[in-house]
Length: 125
Figure 1 (cartoon, helix red, strand yellow):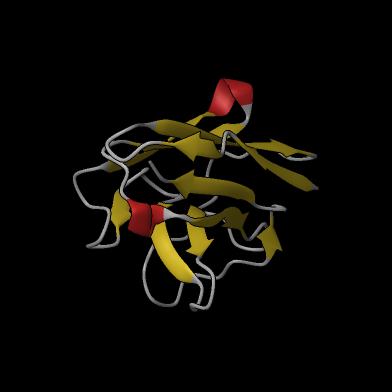
Figure 2: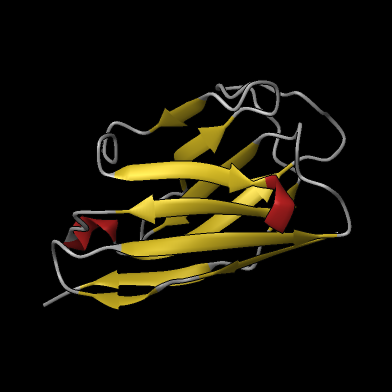
């Protein structure tokens, strides 16, 4: 089982990036996926989550209206579309899931057991 995150880079404020999390070794439908980020000197923060049961989506207040999480089961990929990026979005972004539990709903007790390696997003002029 592998989660491979990519799509990060350097972008100017107001710009966009799309992160991808390609999963291998299992089919990702019916599993909840989350995107997290860790900025320098800060705690890891949950950014967004997509339910394993009905693809309901959830966002941190700091990214609501700017970021969109989605999945393409045919490509075994989870995406995070990030628009209107700001310097405070600068962080390493990680995708995560837990294959032990299908149909998880996103919430404060959602379990994330498998993590990708992270992709750096830098927002700077």
